Image (tube, rainbow, N blue to C red; front, side, top):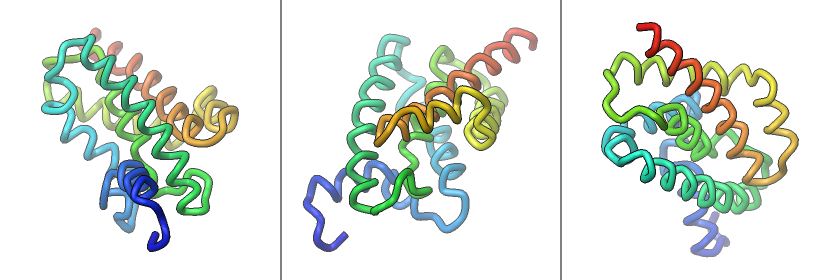
Length: 157
């Protein structure tokens, strides 16, 4: 990244959530875990309209950052790009403001399962859209699956 512009460096840093995306093993899991740890202060503490606004801004910024980072890194959706995990994990928690830690952990597990195994239409979304939007939207669909399942689990218990 020595010959990249400041905006490319910013985009890549955002897309990788700084150093987290460069952890040697399972960067997506580390990104989702970082999202869970940050959620009580940076996401869940806002009213629903604020959380929706955060997700919209995160989708827009993430799409831009992923587009630039893919070009800088010379790969399509490299593993170090993990801003999409932040988006999907927070989408999983969208309708919860005061939620016990146990349910947050369940939300983390559900999101990772849907993100890793990519049931339809998660895999379809990953390939149907190009560039940064494609990187972001498949995790959004995985987050929606996890959101629905988490709501059901909370309702049952």
